[in-house]
Length: 277
View 1 (cartoon, rainbow, N blue to C red):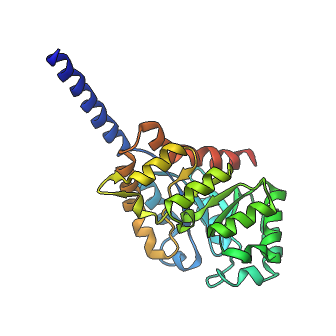
View 2 (cartoon, rainbow, N blue to C red; view 1 turned 135 degrees about the vertical axis):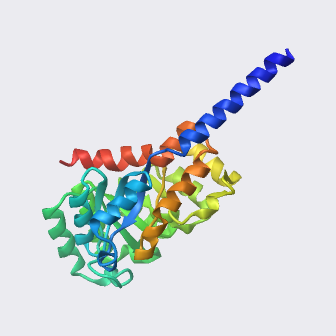
């Protein structure tokens, strides 16, 4: 009996070691990449794509200020880039866009010219979500069957769902809200997904924290990874972020790890984009 128990234990340890090794090679879908104008002179499209591929990023949700950056990367690697349309045409519009009526004709022009899977990432807080420009943007997303990628607090996300109960929202950084609030929102809205960029508190020393483990196990199909290359220097963090994510993903059941690493984003973003052809 002792020998049998020892054998079972050895097999279990081998299984964990095998999964850890496999997790180190997990493909990553990075659901929060920007290639904005200030990065163009620092990093060519070819170099940017090379960084993503070297990091084991097989797909990336890309938006940029302006959209020309997204189109540059898409032209360089249509097999890797899944494009979304940002309402910003230049740096410095993160707070002004919500009261800028010219944003809507810009979005309409781009939507008529190119194919996207989402509108975003946009910054929107609280009652500002009910202003006329964000409202019209929500209408455009519904009209074109697009997701909304919202860098928003929980209040703004609630308001977006009140405007369109059928909206599909990718919640950037999960609003930087505490885990308990993220759980509350995911339970309330079935078409809400959480982008984990900059949520470094999900794990420590390669181990997922108890509160986030509970969240991942309850909602294995609702989380996506992200880096957020909001400034050029963040591109240097893409490989490191992918390695860190694979490290803590190895602490989760294999099916959950794969969902968060790439399967959720593939089914929600890449598949939806492919159907828009």
